[in-house]
Length: 617
Ligand SMILES: *[C@@H]1O[C@H](CO)[C@@H](O)[C@H](O)[C@H]1NC(C)=O
Ligand SMILES: *[C@@H]1O[C@H](CO)[C@@H](O)[C@H](O)[C@H]1NC(C)=O
Ligand SMILES: *[C@@H]1O[C@H](CO)[C@@H](O)[C@H](O)[C@H]1NC(C)=O
Ligand SMILES: *[C@@H]1O[C@H](CO)[C@@H](O)[C@H](O)[C@H]1NC(C)=O
Ligand SMILES: *[C@@H]1O[C@H](CO)[C@@H](O)[C@H](O)[C@H]1NC(C)=O
Ligand SMILES: *[C@@H]1O[C@H](CO)[C@@H](O)[C@H](O)[C@H]1NC(C)=O
Ligand SMILES: *[C@@H]1O[C@H](CO)[C@@H](O)[C@H](O)[C@H]1NC(C)=O
Ligand SMILES: [Cu+2]
Image 1 (cartoon, rainbow, N blue to C red):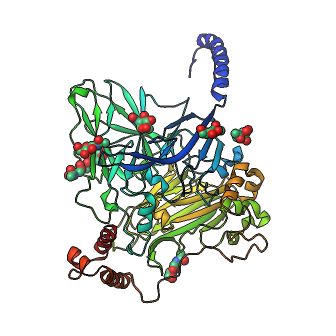
Image 2 (spheres, helix red, strand yellow; image 1 turned 30 degrees about the vertical axis):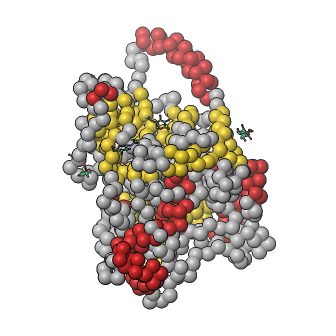
Image 3 (cartoon, protein in one colour; image 1 turned 90 degrees about the horizontal axis):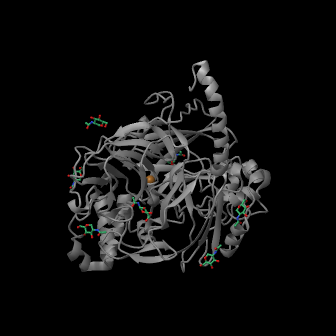
């Protein structure tokens, strides 16, 4: 590219030599691995994130929000996490990081409790010690114990790229989320109870923009900003647009994409989008940076819930906060299926192993609504699945030892895996895979509640397979639609695949991929910290899912999903039965207060009424 003529070539040679020396010296600096040591203790902190009222959030070392972590590719992280709670377990997951087991001993650092590690007990410390893999971009970290990150145990994790192909002046990281009134465990308990037979998801009291409301970003004139947007919420997806400014999508879930102009973004929980925004030439006005809840995910919309929140792009603080901006339609957001990776990777055009997952929501005999892949709702085993795999010898390739309540799938090294998710539920679900990015090779639109689901038909796919499919680690399957994902199994490990609406994960919407377990056994040696943590929790460090290490096929004592509802016992029947019990219990009060005696309620309304009723008692 440099030299076309002989004369230039001569000059070029010495220039190149010099450049080579400079580069070698530079890269020895760049490659020098830096170790970032963090020492965090969890604990409750009283704050007022949205200005509406005080709320206990989960801080580190007495501070909330949690810090953004900035590292470079190839660095090492040593993060000591001490459980400072009195009676809760905890853990930490680094969302989107491959925890590449080629780099050794990293699967045990992935975080999800009872999948790759034992929960950290009160007073205990776990050392997350791993090399940041060959990845760059926007990631985040969060608790992977129940719905714990709902109360703010989350932060951004940025891996900087010394060779970034992007041109910008400054960068900003914005983690958005949803905020609940009550502590996460109370919200979860009610949600997963027979008092909520329709499985109506808890409604947040607000959405936050970088941990607060009415936030302000300061813009200078004539600059290009890289804005990293992370949805670190528990439930709702959010739309974003900036008044009178163009957004250009340049990265999605840590994968550079060919710059794509967008007027509206849609970001589900777990997902990230990086945009470039060019600032104005003058300081004559401040502009709105709007965030809007995807209210189609809400079973009811309380009258006082603010769906739209206005943040300000401030050029001149004297001009005050921006006023709310409007967009004609929320339908025209950029479809990630149409994005193309910047570093093109060809379609994996055949698969070796296909995993079909049908998504359903049903009530079981305890009256609680659960979420299922193929009629199985995830129930945590007695031994973390990684520890089962590492202690099972040759049996590790036999799915039976992992029990029949985790949706275990054993993958062979190097094979191309195809995941087909057919959504038989009328809700949108963002599915997340640990340890990998996948190619999104098919993605259907949605259907209205009550219509027939659009299942994937490989003989008649709904669209052409992209030549260079979009790479992500979290993808939304539309209501009653489907997605088809492919990846190559070259990262031996135990990898969780689950809905990133944390309420749905709590309902059991998860599967576990057991990737090349025999190779994993060669690569992974459990650290002192892992073993100590299990011991503190009285959790066995070997054996099958039921903790049995003599008869590997005996599942005695395995935690199982509840029995089905009795035949002919429908949800409506159950709700009616339940309603009469409630009326019986609270008698006149409830009738007078809520008119339950007279009004015929549909299911959703019923659930909400019951929720309100119980919360007020
Ligand atoms: C982390 O902080 C705690 C409390 O300040 C201290 O006791 C402990 O020694 C620290 N650990 C490391 C590895 O720095
Ligand atoms: C944001 O503005 C609303 C409405 O003015 C106000 O009630 C709320 O307290 C503000 N939020 C914060 C964090 O101050
Ligand atoms: C973290 O892991 C590396 C690589 O195995 C090891 O050299 C280092 O000593 C570990 N750090 C601690 C604090 O144990
Ligand atoms: C967002 O919040 C984090 C954590 O408090 C902070 O480090 C970061 O600077 C904030 N981003 C912006 C653009 O203010
Ligand atoms: C939808 O967005 C695209 C891309 O920004 C734009 O070209 C198109 O005009 C928009 N359509 C509508 C109906 O707003
Ligand atoms: C929220 O924003 C949408 C899109 O701009 C708009 O149609 C709607 O009227 C807004 N709602 C409120 C209450 O401002
Ligand atoms: C789930 O159960 C239903 C009803 O028993 C059955 O028809 C269906 O085939 C099952 N689905 C799978 C994937 O096993
Ligand atoms: Cu979901």
